[in-house]
Image (cartoon, rainbow, N blue to C red; front, side, top):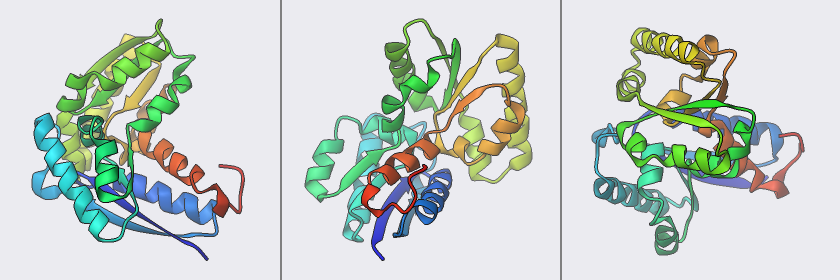
Length: 233
C-alpha cells in the first residue's frame, strides 16, 4: 500500500472540512493510505483582517514548518492566505522543495460550473473581498454574469468558536437576503463556511453552491490517478 502525506494550513478549524473530504475520497477511490498533517494557526486567527505582507510572512513560516515535518504536498486551505500568496507560491515551492496547492486555484479551473448562473454572491473575509479575486475570475469567465461580494467576517468567528446558534442565525439572514435579491449562485470564499456547508444547503436548496474545499480535495485526488481503484470521482 502506498502512502500519501499532505500538509494542510488554515487560520483555524475551517480547513478540517477539506481534510475530511481528502480522507473520505482517498479511502473510497484509491489504494493509498493518506496521512493528514493539519496545522491550525489559531495563534494568529483571524487572517481576514491582516495585511498582504503579514499573510505572506505567516504562510511562508507555516509552509516551512510543514515541509520540515516531511510533507511534500502542502495545501493552503485558507482562502485569505491563498490569495495573499498567489505571487510567491512558485518561489516557495522551489525554496522548500514542496508542491503547494492554494485552495483558490480550483475556481480558476472550474469557473465553468457557473455557466448557467445569472447572479452570483461571493461571501468571504474582509481581505478576500477587498482583493476582488473571485469576482474577477467569475467575470472573466462569464462576462454577462452579475457578481456581488459580501464580507461575513463575523460568521468566521462564530464557526471557529463553535457558536452554532449564532452561525445559524447569520446563515438564515443571508438566505433571506439572497432569495430577496434573486441570487442563483453562491461561492463559499472561506473554508470556515465550508465547515458548515450542510447549514448553507439547508437554507439555500435552490441555489448552486461552490465549495472550494470539496473541489480542491477532488483536484488533489485526481493528481494521484495511479493509485485509483475507482474511476468514478
